[in-house]
Image 1: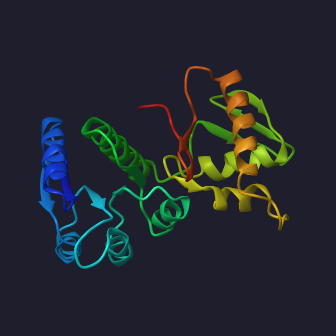
Image 2: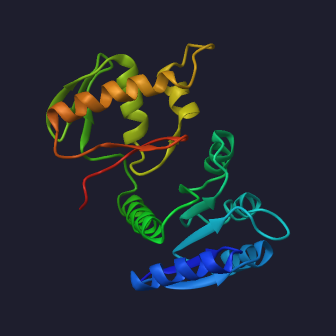
Length: 226
């Protein structure tokens, strides 16, 4: 059982999420106020916080900004804001995941469980992916012992993603990794290289999807379930 802090001002939404999370075996505390949420997180950090952006007094991203320097516990942002800039700001402030409204309670529960597993694995291993072994800069790399031929940009992307399994990397971060010398390349160029990288990973390891897409934000490297 994990202790979840639900920071959500809408009573109907909060009731649905409370029921779904409790049914999944979690202990849930509900707070509808931003200042109270900051105080609770700083004095008694939960296992995970579900954080709505639309809160009284100040918004959820301000809560994230206040608490993140003092706590590295997982925080999932719940929002009706669909602009890419809003999602990127949330990730830059330290959000672990983003769920855009409308959503189902089942989706939120699935995200909560996934982020908790990711967080536990990251703290347990505190190391890059053990599934990937890098050779020289010419593109030599193995995934679970199988050779993988990559271009230089694909190699840089895989190195960046796999050094922190589960972390969501924004396109801007991946762009800097893949195109360190370019000044006028669009972030969408990352998508084409990720697509090719996925195909190569699937060709040698078809039973697992190694790279997860986060709509409008970026990508994350996913280890096989332990």
